[in-house]
Length: 261
Image (cartoon, rainbow, N blue to C red):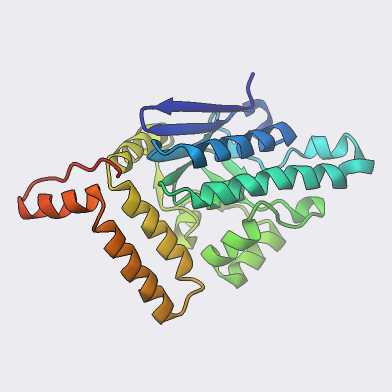
């Protein structure tokens, strides 16, 4: 059985962590597979939306596969370095994809699973979802981009509380804290996520990519440099087929037919 399912439906791809018996915990093979799929997505110019989810209803991902750490304690440092190298490469590439990346969160999310979730552009959680750090519970510190993303999403004080106390957040609290965008009934998660993915896949893909880039740069740029980036982006988009179609459709009072180019 493959530890990751990667399925393509026209211009939408679904990536599913597929170790339900282990709460979709990520072992070395899983992290290597994530890196390979992230590279594949980066090179695919026909892809217009990506969904990342977990198999079953018990967990999106419990994070790193702790039993594999215990199997060879003398070499766990080398194993962790290998695993994080693959995982961090995957998260970096997923976060920089010029297409919308949607996290569909079912059940428990912990540890590095939080990083895989946090790098998504939009996150839809089931009403049964739960979120916890779990790192300090085994004497570890955060990895998988969690200290980067959660500090920005929660703020330093809440991030420290979350990591140090291993507080478990329910779906509604995660929504209030800004970890997720939307909470939906568990039985509707796949349907609602699919509807969103199809809507985004039929939209102005290059504009979405520029939105992602601009929002990310806004956290580090000055006002003036950010406005320069905005000016460059909007002028470049005005020359694309989708940009021209959008203006034409507006003037003709009809829905735009975007092609992603």
